[in-house]
Length: 169
Image 1: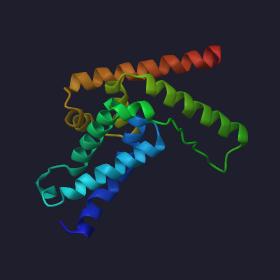
Image 2 (image 1 turned 60 degrees about the vertical axis):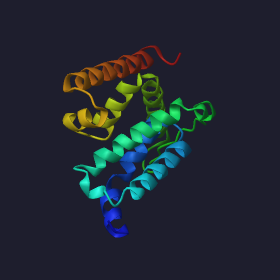
Image 3 (image 1 turned 180 degrees about the horizontal axis):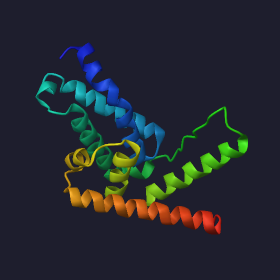
Image 4 (image 1 turned 135 degrees about the horizontal axis):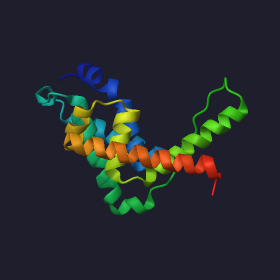
């Protein structure tokens, strides 16, 4: 596979790889490094790339495994927690602060979810993957995916309700 062909195949889902890495590793820098590493690994396999039915699914699986290995490694203790702020110039300062606060709470709640629930929620609700694709990516049965997603959503909903009902604390 030539470089142009490789770029045409890989570039459309590069951001999904990054978002998955960011969700698992939290740190923007670590996620960027992980994405770069996965792209290099994909390039090293460019000769056999045509053999894969779904290159995107293969890359997402590589990203998941790489990030989980990274978290388990000794370097995990040295990960720097950095959250990015999402800004939109056209909204009032009050709305912007509320949005940032909500995003912050969502990120913190998702960070506390078990790994499996975190990945299922990320793939389904953020990346918009179909259930069958998630089953393949995470090597899970459809029932397990639905249960994990349901539990993750329930936890997020309960935690957000708590925050909005009782205030911060």
